[in-house]
Length: 337
Image (cartoon, rainbow, N blue to C red):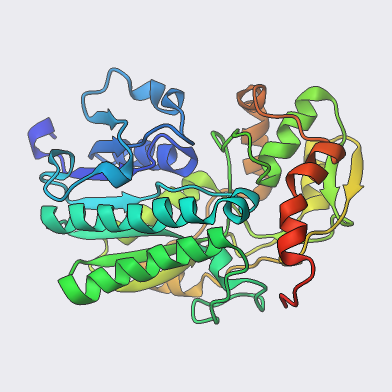
């Protein structure tokens, strides 16, 4: 296929964790890719293996700076929108910033996609919108965001479907459960368990296990997430919301077992579910998608690339207590069940 005949996909946040896996998949499937990523959370190194590939173009502007009719979107067949800011604690401390990036930034992407008349806009939504949900969690479960990050991601999703209704923009959304894999974020914010534990393993430090470690998460490997998003872009269906997870929750204690090492326990946090578990029956039926990477194989792949997390912050019981103080202050005295 010549470059001129290759379809174009714009991937926002494409230098980030899941976004860079999305770029890899698109290139492998014969796409040209325009990556929009200001490298606040992403890394240019995540795309280094595409450096000499003319089919991959990186634009480092902020998504909020993009205007309708922007040349980066010209001729695009699909837009896959991952860009945004994550983590619970910073969202509690800086809610307006989260609304600006995750909501207004999404609106800017919707307008650019509308001007480009794309075939499909696929929004990366978050399962955090469900709050403390019944499991397995269906896509029609009531929405109950517990903190500003969850709210901002849900409002971005609502915006996407509003553009679908008013402007006839073809939109699908995928609510991601607990994605993990190579290239996951190493930011200074206290966040996802994999990044915390991998840096602790490199340092020979104990894993800071929340509660007794029996809580379970629906971990899904990043390449499986990317496959779901490509299917959501290429399908003729639109106006759909799907969950993506492995559908087989794994305990934090099982993760520790696979990583190997000592543990220290820290207090359980308010607003966190004991179990996340995606009901993935709808995406399996609609798109024929199913996860391919087992938890054991996925953890092994991460361990093969563990040096990636060497520069990540090393979290201890003391620094975690300081970092999560606003979390406990905001949610600890509320009935969030």
